[in-house]
Length: 98
Image (tube, rainbow, N blue to C red; front, side, top):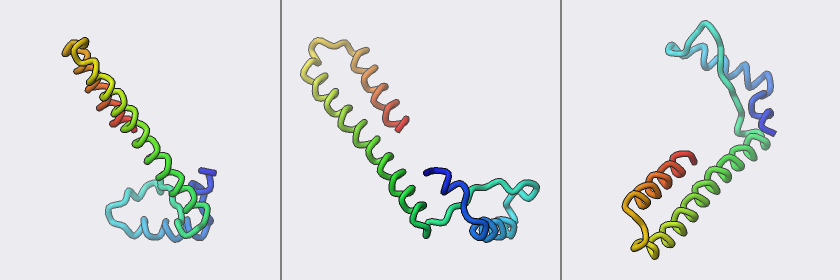
């Protein structure tokens, strides 16, 4: 359903094109932009879906990182400082990728 947001109606496209053309800082040679109208029901559904996916990703990474941290805390005596540092770096990388 993502194509619906990328291809709005001609009326919406024309309205947004006029706004961008009136902007003095917008690059004038090529009109390159994607518009969408949040007032349309399918655009609202897409926005909610994108928010859901983002939040689900953050929750998953946070939950799994917490569980791994909790387990590694119990095994702290068996781990080297390098292992702890690698885990910390991997957790940061996962959070940044989300």
